[in-house]
Image (cartoon, rainbow, N blue to C red):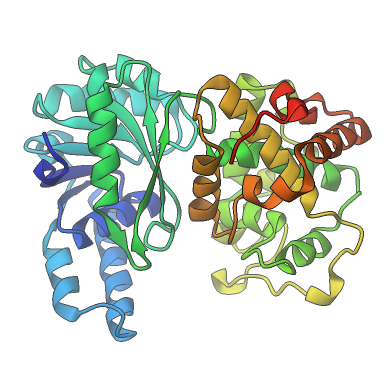
Length: 390
């Protein structure tokens, strides 16, 4: 099987991620069966694809015929068996509930052709467990796209314990053939099934750091975000939490608390906002107000002069060395590629901090750890010894 042999695919879930994945695949010439449990959900997903394509045509960034051809490649389904009947690839994009995903994979294994590859768009959960729910674990892997799919290039290609080398390479090459509105997608190999994979794993200590500073009254979100944006970042860490959803962040923290360290348990301010239904952009209010879904106006004059943006980079590098030690990847450059293409940064953390000297990065992580009493921030042996080549 070759990448060009993937001609028809099923996307399971027509929500934010599902319809975005469907759009990028249809625009790249692949037939898409878009499935959801209710016709209203399917119709809304297809409508959002049409609106997205129309917007690009109106801006003269997309040819009208190309948009029409892409829409003609998308078909809606509410019958899972029918959606999977003749596909070469499935990408599950259902809510982040493991039991739900396991049930989908079990049913997909029964309904999809024997040659079909079964993939999950999960941002955190175990690919290995999903593979074990099927009779074809060697053909199960993660294909983790980032939101919004039509603007973000990164796709993590994630190996489960039994995923074959052939399927990893095939899907890596397939993703490399896709294009969104900004150009080619950027696949990154994740060689070990680990919580958070690469991008979200590097974000985990940053999220913990920001949550703890806010919990202790040691940071004012707008002041921190203004400082981070002042060095060229597209969005500060607190605005990003709102953008992705405080509920999503809370569930992610709960998962990391179970799988990495209890120190990741959600802080009280986040739990309070989620309990109140203030989830960020999706509800119009979270840490910030999002009038009609529009981004908050960050007052750049409020940038905190005492907040050291390099704290974020140092914590990311330290976390990256844990991934190197665990065999999740053997390349700091691949980690940087993930950060640049998944978050819009101009440069990755390893490339950015290399000039500091790895000993200084280690010292900064240790200082943060001792200041806040969080052991997870302590530097790794790899970082302390400076055994990093980039």
